[in-house]
Image (cartoon, rainbow, N blue to C red; front, side, top):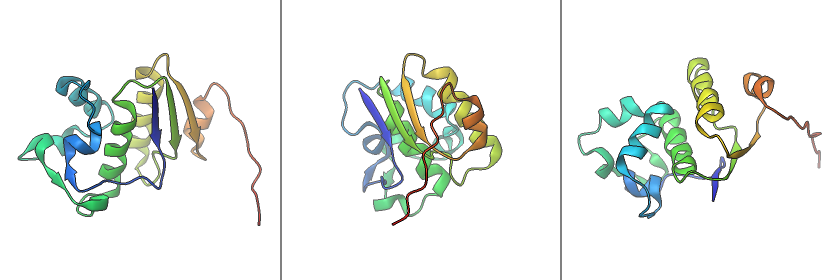
Length: 138
C-alpha cells in the first residue's frame, strides 16, 4: 500500500515489465500503459520493439535520466498506493514535464496521501500542506 520513489533507487537488469511491477501479478497491462502515458512514458514505450519485454541494463545505463525517473515513478504508483513517498521526482526534467508530473500527482491519485521532499516551487505552491525543514549542518 506504499509507493516509494527515492533518489537512491535504480533500474535493475531485467525486463521493463519486471522493473515496473516488481513481480506483482495484480497489475494489468492496460492500466500500466494508461499510467505510463499520463507520466510521459508513452513515446518511450512506443519506441520499444519488444515493448514491456525490453531488457534493461543494471542502473538503466542506456536510458536517459528522465526515462529512468519516469520508470521508477511508474513503479511507485502502478499498484495504486494509499501512501506515496517521493524525493524530487522531477529533478532534471524540463519545466513542461515537471508540470505534467505535478498535474498527474494531483489529479490521478485521489485518496492517496502523497509526501514529497522537494524544492520545486511549482509543486510547493500547489500543495495542500507544506512543512519547511531547516538545513542540518554537520
